[in-house]
Length: 225
Image (tube, rainbow, N blue to C red):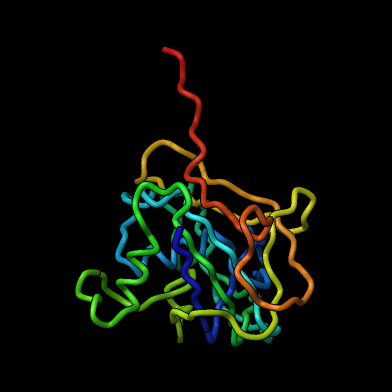
């Protein structure tokens, strides 16, 4: 099974925990679902087709320690249940944390996916194959304003980093699949993770807890007639 190794740099980004409300804090590194979404955007895969790539496996390693800064900005707080709310009256300023200079390594392999995401990523990043991919807009990691500065294929990683690893008792509860309402029946999924100490960067071996499977949606039970 082919494994791709990619290096990614993002100058400004944030990954808001699902419990964050007034104060918009951020995780120290991107959740697996966010990285998966970035790869789908890179390769021109639209939301209705994302399940064709469920089953891919990712490994993520953060290099260095991104600087964290706090800004004061205006957020919209329009309740979804109140469709008649005036959006101008529902805006107020709040604090938000941002990561500055995020750099991480990403390993990708197809796993049990129906279609090959590794082949599409290679096509998107190799100049002589880019015409095979149809996409538009800038490439972001999460929100559209978090534009990626560098994403490149590498033969092997360099230096040291801290890996995201599966851990049933881990501190981080991160999304591994986000189910969009227009993608049919199903629910989003969360996983429990911890971050490893600083170690030499290398592709994790088979069966290692640093490999994260993007499993697809959790199906809702069918209602009895």
